[in-house]
Length: 340
Image 1: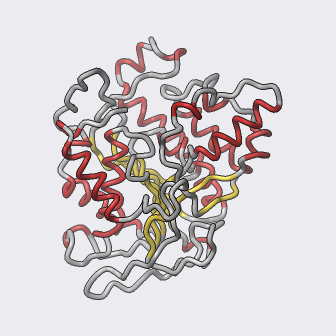
Image 2: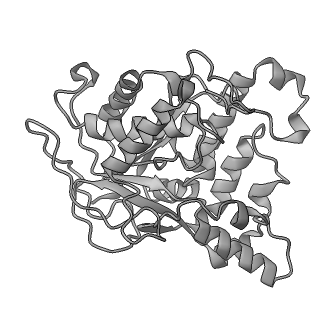
């Protein structure tokens, strides 16, 4: 496949998510000549200002949505990617006991079919060979992350179906769909150990205890991208209202990170092309650059490597039944609420 033929679409919930999840991989692919498009589902309107230096900035407080859009543009430029907005409104992260209802009109309460049609239109226009998104738990259970997962998986299916959303463009079959595994327990353990053995304070202190019961996602692709950590860090800093330059994301010395964890990981969730290696080193491996024929219906899907919780051999963390079960559980919650 020629470099200029490759197209990757990354679906994210809010501006800044793209810079903390798979950013160095995207920078690597754009540098190699691939086209990468970040789809941002919401404007991040209800995000808190997490950088203490900017907490009382009058200009930002007057127009936080506009400021976040400008930050997103700077981050996209740092990574070399295209970026588009789906146009939905941030749901916020509900807090309290009991949890309050989600705001009327927010992304997480948008009818699924409505949100999927908007993304299907983008998919058919950009025609990506590969898509990335969050797992069925949203990576972490923010309502918008879980919703963006549902929308991305449904769009993967519908974009290739001539009968689905016929007014949203010509059908296009995305060939592979991956879940991002940026904050795996394996990564946390490796970096935590490296910091402690060097006598340094680990930013992950406490994580291994508080997250011990979370599923251990089984990565099926590991992308070498340490050379692009500077681009990732520049994109993170571009989101100045959300990222403290003296905070968590920059607490690990980059030479240590490059030595012990020079990769970003992904879990293959769906594929329409054969997968060879047990652990891939290229998200585009096996992809047909000219695309797949769509005749009468979506091309068939093929088996994927065992994924999900690595503590349970073959646990189907990615399969359709698990996704639907998670969706039903979420929809059954009052007002679609999810605990953080």
